[in-house]
Image 1: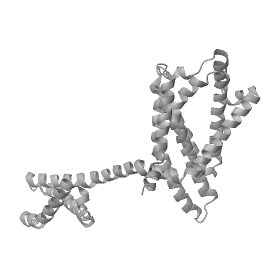
Image 2: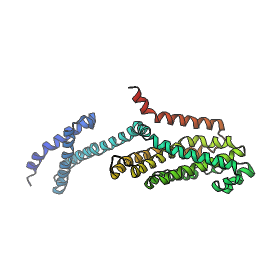
Image 3: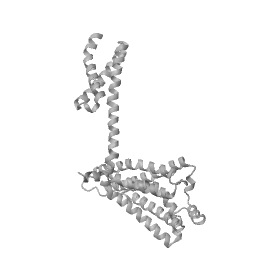
Image 4: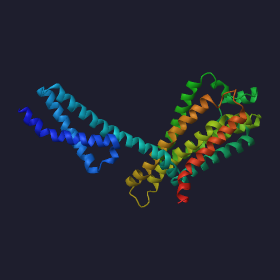
Length: 322
């Protein structure tokens, strides 16, 4: 191989790639036109091949180093640039996309809320009418602790916060994912989970209320429940979206309906995971802490809920202002 002739033939490509990289490094990848970005990617592959040949033919350390530098700079711009765009897309989703999606799919979330409340009201009614009803829904050890010792069970978390917090997160995530996956049963299992969780909360709330422990109980629930319960309702809404695609595809073919509503359900899942992680952290480290005054716990819970509602209404307000 005539080295000088090969270098003379390939050098314009190296210079062109260097010029494109200088512009991208100075002004960002967005400063390049679409055709220039495609050219940069093509030149990167070409120069990478040149680097491999230069190493194989042992064409000199200076040339190899220069080509290696070019390929490294190209890799950084192409792949880290795409990762930056991915992160920007994630930020935009949580900033605007998720609130808009929550509003768009709210009828399904409202269905989940209605079923949960129905379960809670049924539990409250039967617990007052028939005290033995509580033993069907609430574990016997909790009933004895509340009725016989007039104590709540949250104190057991104190001292084991990291373990308790991780366990709470896993449990909440499993319930939420179960509610979403329940959509594949036409929403039947999702409805069951919403009603069952409503029955559980309603029965426990009635138990502590009957034994005059409602105030500290709700002080415990409010801080994390302000995020945890809405997240579970969103998961229920995602499950009903899938159920709607299966049972009532409408003008779409069932496979197309599953793609459309399934995409919305997946996006809701991406939204609820951070909520459940935050809620689990609060429930493990903050809610049961005996040194935090109950009024402050109520204040934190209500504040978080107000912030969540304001966040979910964000896109709606932005649209109404236009």
